[in-house]
Length: 103
Image 1 (cartoon, rainbow, N blue to C red):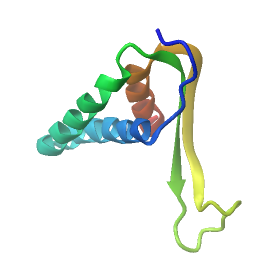
Image 2 (image 1 turned 120 degrees about the vertical axis):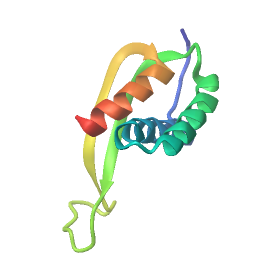
Image 3 (image 1 turned 180 degrees about the horizontal axis):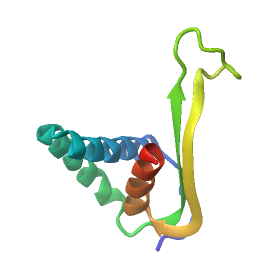
């Protein structure tokens, strides 16, 4: 359990991408890429062990050329999932990254 403020970092975002790549390569047979993603995840998990907190994962999708934008960001919401209940950070990010992308 972690007490105090935790903010999302680039490391957390990279972890979510690796979790998604690991999942996708598990289904497409690209074993080498799956292993690389898993190794990167394991390196990052060391820093997250023992940390539990509320968390949310949001995926944004880059809009294509010529697509009308509602704002100037160039991105649109692909999906968001989260919880206010404390959840182990490593497991929560991994699960939510995959669930929100494929779901």
